[in-house]
Length: 214
Image 1 (spheres, one colour):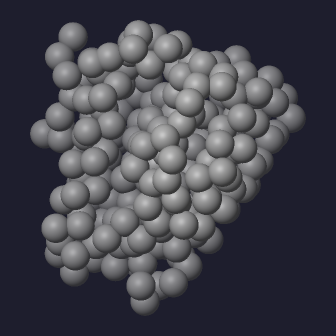
Image 2: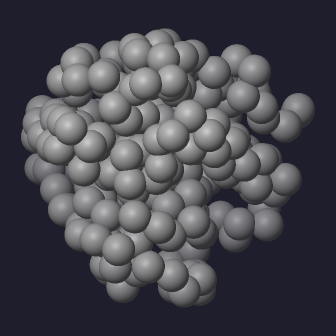
């Protein structure tokens, strides 16, 4: 299995040069950038550049998200580096983290949340849709300050892939890192994106139209 890169990233919306903000969209296992690109429809057309990287072989890391992180290396570190590279690309175009949103679904949600926890600065927003932080319950987290970054954790209470206690613990951990956490737990067992999550994304992406997401 090869490691990941940004070569296959889908780039759409406004170009980074002159864009009001950027949103990085991270797809789930067995999915693709084009699948998650549909989330852009939930975000107002207000000058946003969208960047959706592609996982090599369709998976960001081979094991379950709650496996010890070492079991998912070196692919996990490579996946995090891809998000970092896209964020740096946006910053080089004048779009800082505070004007950058990071959104993922399923395996991509875990990756988006983990990236933010490992690189804690003020982001425009971060959304983990049916996901949680990577690693076993109680895994140590580095210190840092997300400086009030709006963070969404949404999941069904009986999601077959994301045990709810991991979502609860992730919300606590991200709050300790200074995030402004919104936790949405939905009845049932669907592994899906819910209308309330779409609404949250639309509001966050549409906030502060003169300065960017957030």
